[in-house]
Image 1 (tube, rainbow, N blue to C red):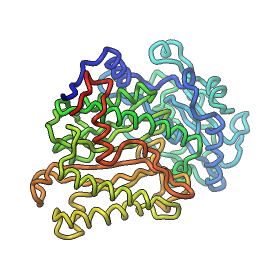
Image 2 (image 1 turned 90 degrees about the horizontal axis):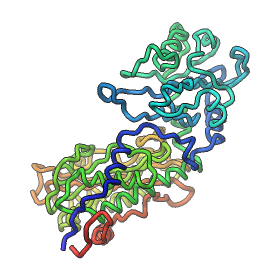
Image 3 (image 1 turned 180 degrees about the horizontal axis):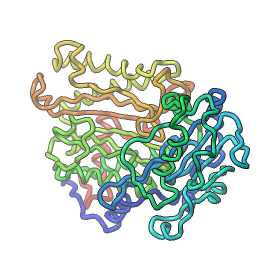
Image 4 (image 1 turned 60 degrees about the horizontal axis):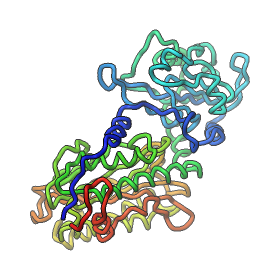
Length: 473
């Protein structure tokens, strides 16, 4: 007897609505496992240790952006500003001085500007910290209102280098708001526009050096994000049915993410079935399944700013065909080789190179390619990227180091019309795990999620509480 997809309770859909349309949560009031002020206080000092003498670094909050008409996108803080302060609000600027400076009556090595409290606005969009709240909850000593920043407050020309990230793209402009980011940017630009000491390049390198090495507090949040994501993937394995759709698969994943405390999906969930399994970043998720399809499920949760990134490839009817299993096992073995290459001192591309060696030899043995160099027709993306505050996190792509967290995600994608036996067509497989570089063997942080064909089939034979019944397939 097949499992049928059950009409779900109203709480399921309310959770999805809440997931989709709420803005940044009130972390400071309700969450007890945030990064501590002590963590964030240590990060500007780590940056100062990298900055050259007589320099200053400037960071701006991410803009609020409009999705359509008067509907805004969910707000997401600039990862660098969050990393350095813990602030989750817009309309802010952080200034980090290499050496302590006299700024008005203050003597400080960092200065944070934040938007004011505004009871009228807070009734619509939630509480703001204001300067006093930022001092108390973030532990930052020198905090001022964004409206109080003036072009003459800081003598930029006296610094040997002024580092900053230029903001690009359209942003909301509220000319009547004295704390508006557009106004803050304009005043900063006016005060530095004649400088010959601006540097918009090296700051990325400095921040990548810091962020690519995860601190223990960061790893704790990443483990939570990965655990939540794994529960979503496992629930989907149990609930998946050939009479479902891609968007229903997405709903199950993201329902579990939200039910377990994730604020957002870390990125648009990829649920590509059939021919869509061969599209790397397919996110439309509208296709009905057909019995015998594979579905590439690339989805991860974001928890307190930190991302998971996990991919599993599943047979929608619970059983891999012979051809699907052959391709899957190649990708699995390639991933195992890539994971084994995740060791201190190896080049960043070592996992990719190890995976490629497996894939090209095995595709050649199956007659899918005629020459080893033709593997790139079916595996044409990199195997790894850093993971953290961004899904594709900051990093230098140098040698792997203790505390790096990277993905290992080889894949094979054989779309219809490929120059090989049609029995391989529309088989797309990707397997992705999140791997911590340790002083010894790599730690697969997402290793508890079923991954072999045998383990996946066994999990898919189990019953989900999201199905009406769970008899044998």
